[in-house]
Length: 253
Ligand code: MG
Image (cartoon, protein in one colour):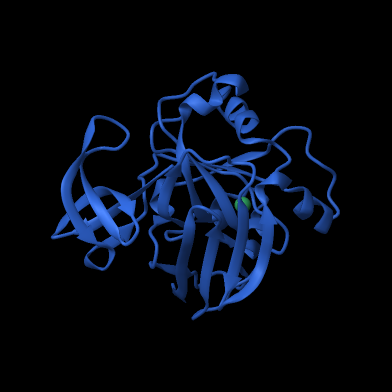
C-alpha cells in the first residue's frame, strides 16, 4: 500500500509519497516516469492539491444497495454513467461555491477509482491492471437544477463541484472500504463499498466499452444512502477507511 499526494511547496507543484506526517517529494509524473527523491518535507510545510488532474470524471448514478432501498428504486440493470468536467475539480480544504442560482445544494460522498494507464475495451478480468489507486470525492450537486433540467450536466458541473483527495492509495481491496460523510461533525452517510451494486471491475468494463480512460482520470462509484443539503458555512468531510478525510467548506458563489 502506498499513499500519493500532490502538493504546492516552495512555489512549485510536486507529487509526493506520504509517510506518517512527512512527504517524500517525487520528481516527475506518478502516472509516467518518476523517481522518489531523498527530499523530505513536513505535511504542514505543503498545501495539498487534488491528487490528480483528470481529463474527465466518469460518475455512476445509482450504485449502492442501501441508497436504492432508501429511494425505493428498482436496481438498475446496468450502470448509469454521467460526466463531471475537469474544471469542477478542487483539492482538500478548498471552498465549494454555493451557486446563487441554486437553493438546494447536496453532498454525495463517494469512493473514487483513479486510472493508471490508458484503458479502452478492458474486460472486468483485466480491470485491476488499469487501476492506479483510490481516493475520496464529494459529487456536489445542485439538486434543484439537476431535477429541473432532466439532464444532469448543469446541476453537477459548477466550478468547485468536484473536491478530490486527500491522497491516492494503491493496493487496497476496493470492496471493503468504510465510507462516511460528515456535515459539521455530524454523520450523514455511513456505508461500506461492499454495498456497491456494480463492482469496480464491472464498472471499468462498462465505461471502457464507450470511451478511453486516460491516466489520472477518475471514476466516482456512486453515493450511499443519506444524501442531503449543505448550507453556506458548513464544513463537509468525506472519510474513507484506509484513505483519509477530504474536508471542504461551503462558501457563497
Ligand atoms: Mg453521485
